Image (tube, rainbow, N blue to C red):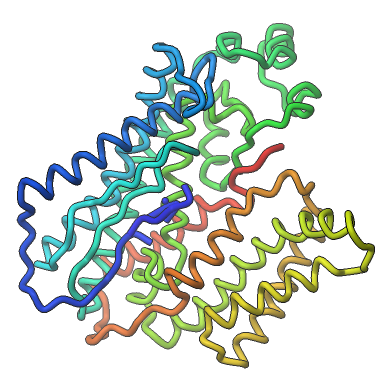
Length: 405
């Protein structure tokens, strides 16, 4: 089920619960109105909050109401983002219906902050006991969502306006002056923008490859102004979040179906250590600054983070001592390795996405996938789709997805 910070987001895509009832996927009128109401409220919130990102004269909703022109741009953004989300969730839904599995319609989750939604969720109301059914339901959502998000992004690249389009936006005076003089976007963040602090979207392998094929592509710290680019990037990133091969995320279902229970358990534990390592890169600079305001103790921030890791690993691995200690060590080593390659980020650049996601996985999604009753070998076509899904994860994930530069 989509449970994103932002998603299956930011994002599991569905929940498996037991039920003795026969699958009956015929919602009554009251149920359909409830789901429709949540959808329409989500459209409203994504439109209003999205206008703050893509509007020419942005107003931070709910503290103000954007003008009509910005609302229309926000509505475009909402239509694009919710198209991705809807295809993703109904991919799961129709796969479940195809296999005669009892399932609910998607519940859209509106929120008047951020991008206006926490994603959507469907509930599968009986245990899936065959491997190929688990795979189909798990893979259908991200595959459908990826196709839509990729199409949105390509349309955005193909229809990009000239760089002087930034003259339409409020503020950005130094950027406008640079573009007016040079007819192109700068390769650096201007002093004015740097002083204000600007929302920067992290690059990914796929985005970088596609952007290199087109002209007039805005820098990552201006990309969120463009509805197609921002909605496409979010769709691809949320797809990657859901494809993480842990627990009952989509990627957990897919990889479990590909390699079985024992191998998946090992991979999922190591992967969870990687997620916590990224969380460590966000948290440690902030802890260092906070602690230094009160006391000067060398490596105190590492001790505090180590304690948090101990809590996370114990919850994730159910106090399996060997794995708890081994994955704490691996997580710390990976964080140190990240710092040695990319440097220690400024505390203001921490978005805490991976910290939130680490706790979300440990306490909600779980690391290990519950065993399936009948473990069968997937067909060649399913295996190809499964490994391509894992490739999509690699191409669309970003170690520092959204931060203030």
